[in-house]
Image (cartoon, rainbow, N blue to C red; front, side, top):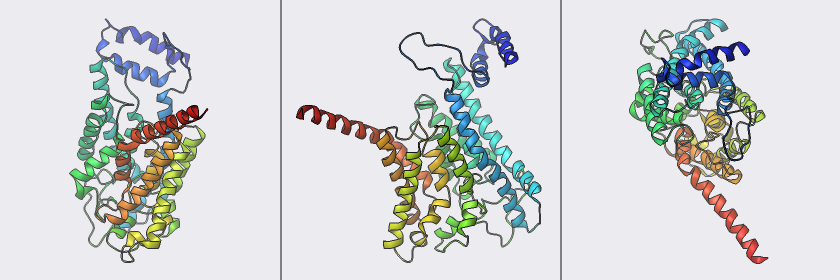
Length: 390
């Protein structure tokens, strides 16, 4: 560690004002604060100092996402070889998935971080760390067969118009990763839905174009529900993730491992997570009891709703986003319950969009601050009444 500190100290004059590379000071500062604990101190006011700054918090979220990424890589390969009818071992399946997913990760980070580095240098500010998580989530929530140029355009749009124009990390209203997916969904719907986009049937890098195989259908369970049929998948397979879908959203088991990491480290709120699942389960139960009998989504068992699509992933990793979600303790319950409720309502009542979770979270992002305001105002009114009564 002393070696790294000395190395950065030696380079600092070159990147400081008046140095040869002063124009890249934000880039230098970003790497330094990533590698070392910042030793800058506040000049005024009362502050609490902690080694767990926002960069390390973001890194912890990335660590929690790793199980989903690793399983998603293997499942991508497993679904590929199953689709083409070829027997393959575990490592061959994983290697194929690794080669298929890696370009998406690289494009996400290169485009997103490139824009953030440029914006930070232009504004003469330090590099913000929010994209450490966003860049990792984007490859996990898109179909593996999505063309790389589409991901590049969508990422650039989301970083610029859903983040930078609002002031950067901490000021954005909407979850940036979800805006990326929403941009793709509404701009290129044929690449984000249907039964041909979830399984890569071409080579790992997509050089073969991912051509569909005659008679092959890689429809997700929710895609089957949207067509009016119950999914031909067991709860165990859905929970473990042995199904087609977005790279990181299929395995509820891996998602729960990530949730355990986030909760143990105090990064995410258990109230938000739990309330999303409770809201979704109660809404699904209501549709099971009183929904139309000819609606496959309404009759899908409540526990299947929770393990299919992006429901669990959204509840754990995106509904808990500290920037865009409710922050008051009571507000977290309300916010999560409404997300779970809206996700199931969209699934049942809008067969054109079988997922539901993306739109539910983006919708509630709008109301997160309003929910907090109402909770705070209610507390103020209650205390004022107590004071008057005394």
